[in-house]
Length: 500
Picture 1: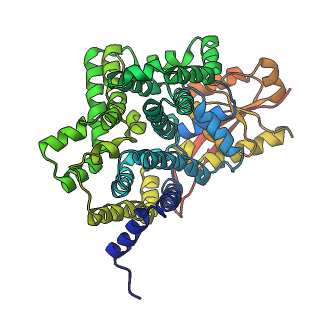
Picture 2: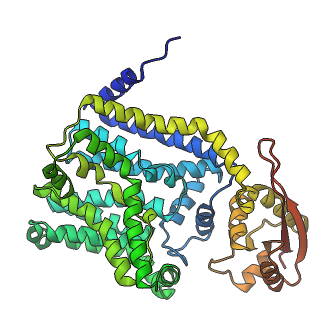
Picture 3: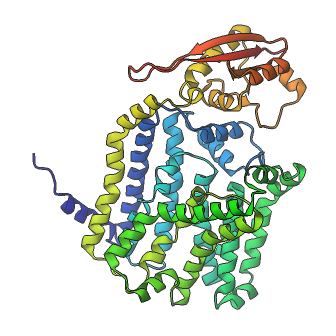
């Protein structure tokens, strides 16, 4: 059987994507396949490791829904609660949710690019974005950063439409998007500040600010944010205290170093698309200047909306004495294809689009092929025991619990990392106690709880015994074998305090 020529197949694929009659359907189908391939990859490659702590932590938040949490605002928890209200709590379903975030962001980038690029360039721009690790490898770890990808993208789109048209409809949508960004992570203040800067430096600013559009945006944003703002006041702005305690009050030299690392790391993540465009277009200095800061007003507004949210964190970090990391630039790349490809001097030939499409298709396919090997290598390296043993440990805790009481297990405490892993895997879907709003003493006594620690962690075990002095203490060893490979045993201390 003769295999199809990859260039011929890529040419047909390009023809479908660049045909106005079929482009939208083809892009949606492509993104659906993209999600499926990366979801299967993650399910296999990460199957030996268990869920990342960030992911189980969001599950813990989702079991205790509110308008805010100690570390972050609530949007990620709301999304996870809605998702697992429909689908089972399983690795494959969680990775599916994770991959929907960049896929939606990619679709929004595709739609936004229609205002600036022809179909050939839009196809290339979308393919280039898929070569950025933020849109696949890093996005597989669902957390507050991945949640920002689609909401930053849609807010940017709605803001640009609002600014250009001064439409009340888009102004209201921009306010909704801005609120969702802030409900995702407070890092979004740099997006909002950046869009304000973009509006202020544009020549049409007087018309915009004299219209109702910006004030509708502000009003809608504040209305949507109002419950969370009230929560912040009631809880003494706890997430800000947490953030400053972890990342703030750093020496000047350290903040400058982290800011430079943020810039260098972020540029490194997007280096492949940039290098490809430079290699394909071979731009002269004048064209490079037009890429960085366009000559015409519409493209310059888009450039400002790109550069300001990306660069303002550097100023904020140095001025505020805080550390930042390049991973936090994850949602900031929606407009990158517009910057790189919109200059008239940058031309894209059909052959070049075919080659980029081949690369974009090859990456997830190759990663899927090697995913079993990645899983084996990760397992041999020794993953975190609580994560990889979570289902076995949760089953053992529930077995012991139901020997003591017919009631379902409602609360799990002890070591935070273990507790989050256990509640994510337990059939009873309990709530976590560490770093969460605590139930009343009466509710805890009526429901009971299970506390779990690494047996060698004497501090955790002592705290658990103090919290449940009359509880039943159990030592259990858990070992998980993976594809015939013997795992490393781990000893846990479990304290069962049944309902009173």
